[in-house]
Image (cartoon, rainbow, N blue to C red):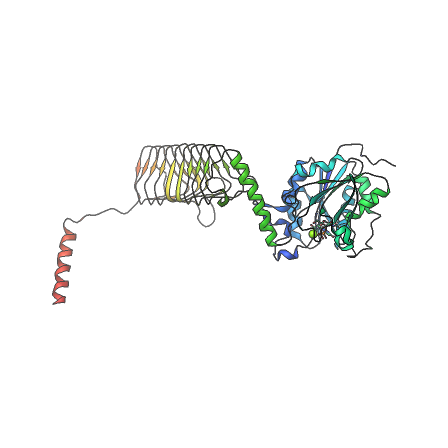
Length: 454
Ligand code: UD1
Ligand code: MG
C-alpha cells in the first residue's frame, strides 16, 4: 500500500455552495440566509478557520454574483472556485482542484448550508491522516441520505439511497457529507469517479470504495443529527435557528445570566452577556451586542452593535443601535433609541428620546422627548452633552452642537448654538400671562351658552 500521509499537518477546507437553493424560494442565495444573525456560509467559514484551515475554497455556481461578492469580501477572489454546470458533489470538489491540487496537507469538504456544525464536531475527521474519514450520524428518518456501510471500524462504502438495496436502506447510520482526506489522495480518487449511477451525477461518496480498493484506511466518526442538519427550505432554516437559539439560551443560563423566560429571548451568534445580568422576557439581540456583568435588560428591548456596562439598565421597550455604549449604571428607558452615542457613568435618558451621533457625559439627564437632530438630509453631525448637564423635556438639539458640563437646557427648547458650561439656555417662545383672562372668558361663554339653551 502506498502511503498518502501529507508531509505536513496543514489543513485546507473546500466549502460546497454551488447549489441553486431553489427550494428556499428566495431571491437571496440560500447560503447567505442568516442563522443567529450570521450568513450560513459564514458559519461554515468560521468553523474552517477555527480548525486552522490555512486555505479555504468556496465552490460557487455561475448563477450568483451576490454570493461571489460575499466570498470575495471575506476571503478574497482567490478563494472562489466556480462549478458550472453542477454535476454532483464529487464534481463540485473537483472544481477546487485548480486551487488546491498542489496542497500538501489534509482537505476537509464541508457545506455552506450546514450552519450548526462546529469546528469541534469536525475535528475528529483529521485523525485519519492517511485515508478518508467522513462524519456520520444516526438518522431519525434515513430517507434519501447516503448510508454508511460498515465492516467493523472500517467504512467499506457510502451507498446513496437511490442505489441502495433494501438491506442497505435499513441502515440508520447516514452520511453527513463532510469528508476529509489528504489533498493528493482526494483528487486522485476523484479522477476515477464516474457518473454511471441513478442520478447521473459524480458522487463524492464514491471515493470511499475507491480508497478501500487502494488499501487506504476509511473511517466514519459520528456527530449528532442536529449538528449536521442541512438547510434546503425556509422551514429548515427556521428549525436551524430554533436549534441555534436553544444552544445559546442554555449557554447563557449556564454562564450565570438570569432569564425568567429564556424561550422568548433571541440571541445573535456573537452575543456576549456577563454573569449576574438579568434579561427579562422578549428581548432581541442583533449582532454585536456586548452586555457586561450585573446589568439589567428589560422586556421588549432590541439591542444590536451596542455595549452595556455593569449596573446599567435598558428598557423596557428600548432600542440600542450600533455604536450605542452605555457606561456603568447608565439608564435608557422606554421608547428611547440610541445610535452611535456613548453615555457616561450614571447618565440617564429615561423616556421617549432619540439620541443619535454624539456623547452624553457622566451623570447627565436627558429629559423625555429630547431629540438629537443629527441629520440635515445630507450629512450627519454630532451632539455633545457634558457631564452633569440637564436637558429639559421636549428639547431639540440641532447638531453640530455642544451643551457644556452642568449646563441646563429649558424644556421645549430648540438649541442651535453651543451652550457653555454652567449656563442656562432657553430656545422657545416667550410665555405671556394675562391676569384673570381665563376666568372672565369662561364666565362670558357660560352665560352665552345658558342664553341659547332658553
Ligand atoms: C449528499 C450525499 C449523501 C449525504 C447527503 C447529506 C453525495 C453523492 N451524497 O446527498 O450521502 O447523505 O448529502 O445531506 O455526496 N452541491 C454542489 N454542487 C453539486 C451538487 C451539490 O455544490 O453539483 C452542494 C449542494 O449545494 C449541497 C451539497 O453539495 O449543499 C449536497 O448536495 P445535494 O445535492 O443536496 O446532495 P444529496 O443528494 O443530498
Ligand atoms: Mg441534500
